Amino acid sequence: MDKKEFLLRQIAKTNKKSYENYVVTRVIHKLDDSTVKFITQQYVRRPQKRRALTDLYLPQISFHVEIDEGYHKSIGEADKVREADIIDATGHTIARVDATLPIDELNNSIDGVVKRIREQIQIKRDLQQFEDWNPEKEHNPHAHIEKGYMDSDEDVAFYRHADACNCFGHSYVQYQPALARHAVEKGLTIWFPKLYDNADWHNVISDDEETIYERRKRDNDEFIRSYLNRTDRFKRLVFARVRDSLGSVMYRFKGFYEVDVETSRETFTITYRRKGRRVRTYAPIEEFARYDKTAIEEST
Amino acid sequence: MDKKEFLLRQIAKTNKKSYENYVVTRVIHKLDDSTVKFITQQYVRRPQKRRALTDLYLPQISFHVEIDEGYHKSIGEADKVREADIIDATGHTIARVDATLPIDELNNSIDGVVKRIREQIQIKRDLQQFEDWNPEKEHNPHAHIEKGYMDSDEDVAFYRHADACNCFGHSYVQYQPALARHAVEKGLTIWFPKLYDNADWHNVISDDEETIYERRKRDNDEFIRSYLNRTDRFKRLVFARVRDSLGSVMYRFKGFYEVDVETSRETFTITYRRKGRRVRTYAPIEEFARYDKTAIEEST
Image 1 (cartoon, rainbow over the protein chains, first blue to last red):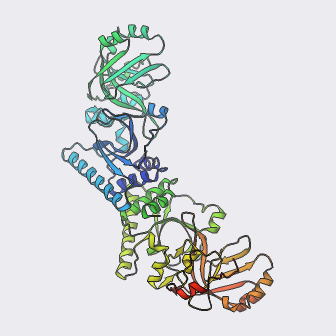
Image 2 (cartoon, rainbow over the protein chains, first blue to last red):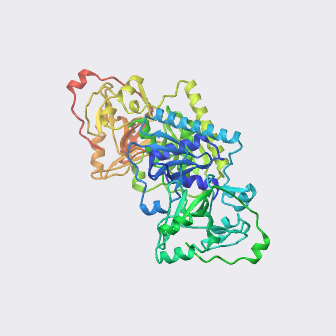
Image 3 (cartoon, each protein chain N blue to C red):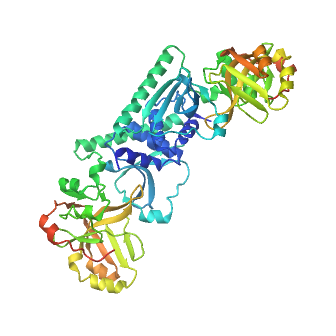
């Protein structure tokens, strides 16, 4: 999907709401910077707050715009929210626009937000921390390998398991299972869980994303006992299965987690604690690619 | 309706069409001038061309934007078109935007159009021919009286018969009939016809708006014969009944017309020729308002 298609689809989500469409298009057209990515209707978690939707999200600068239309907004069907790509907005900037203002004041208010956005971008550019939006590169393992790392604070997500695996030494054409071995760092497992209640699992990620809880719906005790012997699977790079802003399935990088064995044993719930947000990426290792294509069979 | 409401409703008409919404909002936000009125999806007549829709119309500078999306656009249901406020776009500027261009070229192309719009506005401002958009004044008889004239080239339309009549010496609170006497210039009649085929009349206005043809569906010959004796009704200020861009009934000023008696007699069709586009307006004449409230009874 190219930039135009992506932008038009993001804007199209606002089409039934004329205020939202007006504010969002004004921000986009007045900023007028095609190096900037926009997501409309982003699900967020914030400390001490419930899940919410922000109307416009600029992931490169962790900046959100909330449009106040003078009434309470529902955040949509429970099912849609459950699978949604809910991001942790701790530390993000939230700008508010009061859409009930008269037109000239409303325009001024939006232009003020655009000014703040431009300043934030400039600050990141000056620090060489601003990456131009490039739809072809952002979900492409090569770009992540070139960069040398991936960081859960930097909007990292892939459309396919294989693309995530190929950031860690693999060269899969396709890869279906929910677990994969890290091709370079022994003892690391790449995991693609559904971090919400689903047919087979009671999975939960905490609001601050620091803890993941995993319970099997059938035969959980047995699962826990056998699992706690598999020390080779305790360290996990987590790519949570989500529906992205346009409804496609994606796997969002949440960080590096490790099993808390004691808590898991006591609570009969596999409990993972986040140990890091940034991990190294690796170019394909030909040897591994050739000899070890065996999928790990556990699926989550 | 205030400017915000009007703008949002105009933009809302584009909401199902993401290209159109993108281009229209970019023009509006980049121009960023709340003295300018925008109409989306304006029906137009052009010489040697069929009726068409332009995607964006700026009546103050007679400027249209057509968005080429790479496929043929239908102009909608016949019924809707029949009543539509179709304007004569002869001499108007039509700018085209190719929405199939890549995003940066598309943006440049739209920005080029915005530049042309700004130049046109400046030219009219320099000539003191640009009137700031003022929704409260534009359909208000007082503003037209103050101005001293109304011109069919200047986007003149009223929501009620009374408002049109009150530009010509009347002070009606309400006025229903299709004909009214001019309160000052004797022998002039104010007329609110449906200029399309309707239940009672075969009415037509020519594409160049220079000629109006009127035939009654029942007993036309009798109507013509009796009509041609009413010389006091030959001169007409015509306010055509239309549905405006947001679906409301309005009466659009088309100019000053006079019956062509010979042609009318020969063709058994009352044939009106436009004699002028600009007419004088008059403040309420108290005497007339008090004594002559009788409605003319013919209805069209």
